[in-house]
Length: 452
Image (tube, rainbow, N blue to C red; front, side, top):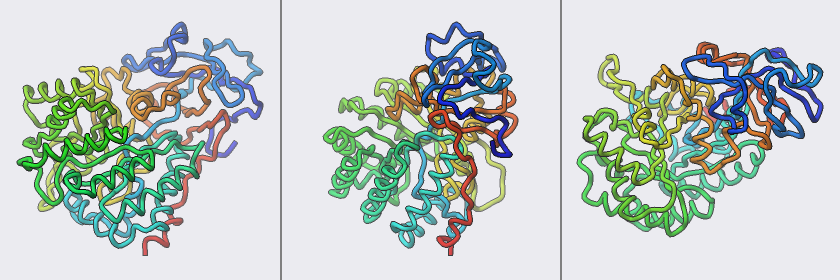
């Protein structure tokens, strides 16, 4: 047991984690007979003994069932399934020391990133930075990541092979998925078709930003309808899901989400659609919000909010020092109330779009609770970092606790949500197939040669 952990994981192939607490919403119906300890306004936790055998969860039993000799008594420590990050940008990660954002806003981020991409994003640079991000996420207990890859040529032909190399190297540790990101107007050209082919060969998701290159968000360009229809057509022809950056702005006049939903319904798109950001929706009037969300429900759109990055970028005035007037996030409560699937994710990490971050989805969840008011009641919001992104990513074995599933778990010192949300769980124990992994984080010095 390392100095910073709080219990020793048994080395036997079969053992118990006794007297733990697990989220009721993440267990199977067969576990509902367990005792529920309501610890923080309906964030219900089961008191349980977890039986681990041959790297899997063998059984979930009422607390006190397992024999004392079978494993450690964890005294109501919380246990979570490993977390999932369904929207991040590993290819941008950790370039801040060499390419900071001078203004802190979206325009400054786009310019700085574009300059760095053109000058530096070659195979060695991408492999080193993306590997660093994966090592960090793994140590924090992240099981699956979907990364967006910048795809304006020639970058797609560089980044997708690197991604495929990393996906193979990390198989069995982190499930890796990739989505393209490029301006919508490339789908009016043959570059869009070639990009769709590249994504299909890599088994990714077709993605874009719902705006045209170098043009303002409003009014929508006359070709918007043609471009988004062509986007869905290319995805459908190749059996690809769609993953879109939508309305990442504080301008309430930006309404492309409603258009995406309308056109997806009109063309009968059969794949999954994930829309990220959707910031401007939160600034529209209630009637327009209702119409838009009704259209999204008809189209079967899923949503992911990026709370830390939207908080960082949105409503920042690069010309003056003033306090932001809003939090920048979208309407997760209203979406969930309509039965839409909603997730949270980490997005950018130490790059011009977000100067901070550490690929830690547990930290993202705790910040999201505070930024988005995912409390009073807490309810099932832990699903937004576990079960829901797993379902969105097509990973039904992830994000929940059930007999037969891999024992890929986070064991926390916190005994309830109050303790979890109040103090960073830096001494968490991360189990992979029932075995404790090394949770030491990679040293930033490993990237020093890339920063000069």
